[in-house]
Length: 181
Length: 208
Image (cartoon, rainbow over all chains, first blue to last red; front, top):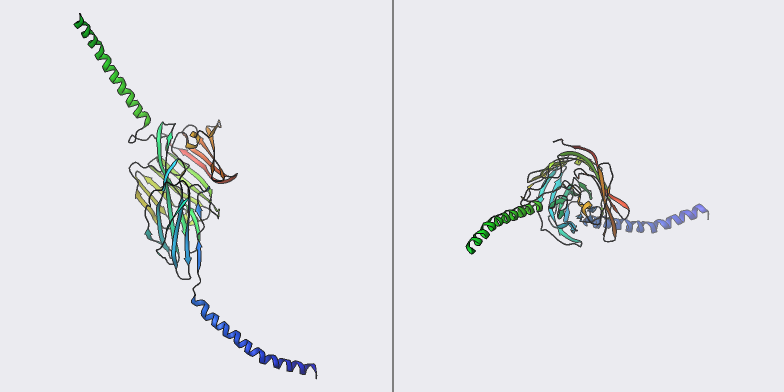
């Protein structure tokens, strides 16, 4: 038997094995392609933390359960504490915006109660699902009081964090603006 | 004789009583003036000025990103000032962001969003242009008993305060004008690494 004849005979046998194997592989591929897309791609991620530089007073992030079509739910986290001469702090405002591509104001969560904790504590505002291209921004406010020897008078001030932006469509964040309340 | 002595005593005592009453009123009013009182007008330590400053801060969060912003601050008094964003290292589309405090009204206009904030502060509330810009003749840090203050002999002084925040050693340093207390530089370091620098690039004080 010449080699070419043997090769031809072997190829024939392989053909009979290969066809069923291929059939099974194709069937599995079809099955997977049907099953997998029915479960939406999901990612539960948080935007980069925005904290003051120590951190000494605040940290914020927005948690996103992101699918290919919507953001649900959205947990808006803020953490804070006070340190002398700060006597109390609060979430002063928090807003939801939809940017498609221009930004339209959606809702305001309003001023939250003053807090006096000296160790870190966190609060969260959840719910209110939004579509893609959403922005959550917030500002925290601090009240401080101290005796000024240069004027022999009591100084009482509020100062704020910069505007803390969380861009949900790109899972990014930034601090914008000055610390005015 | 006794009557005449009594008359003499009354004649002496009345002026003494009146004098003591006037002196007491003077002392009380002086104390009230010095202590300010809750409703007395707050002293304005700073003159009006226009300032351009750059604020570079590294976020203390896990990502630790550094953002640098440049502002123009137009300051009239504690209830009238305007801050405008001139540059932003990561969000150039935010340039033009502006916060204006006028009396009790506080308004923020973000060029990307429109009016973000428009509200009224409480009658007794004062806010600051920034946490390091406190209107006072001597910055708060310099008045801390633990601070060291150095006269730089250039019309400036520098106050340094070392403190702890958890496991972190924090050094805060503020350089200010000795004539009016306006800060020119604020630097914060955490465990030897600089995390915040607010530096005045330009200052024009109003001539009154």
